[in-house]
Amino acid sequence: MEIREFQELIAVRYKTTDLARGVPRTFMWFIEEVGELSTALAQGNDRANIEEEFADVFAWLCTLANISDVDLEKALDKYTSDRVKGFKPK
Image (cartoon, rainbow, N blue to C red; front, side, top):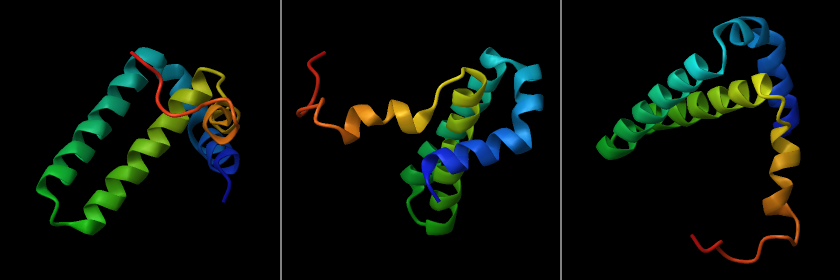
């Protein structure tokens, strides 16, 4: 499945609810999932849980992108084209 296809799947299933929740509250859900991924990685002994948390983080990222009108696949062109060379200085 392509990234755009997954993002569209998330939109079909959840966009109405996600729009009603709004970006700030959806972002909080996303951060909660990032925290759960952090915990899973720190414990490091449950591969299935780690994979589940990665999936949750990606799904919530797609949700945020959907309600912010961002096409993630297009945004990722920054990394798949020749535009980025190495790391950006901070």
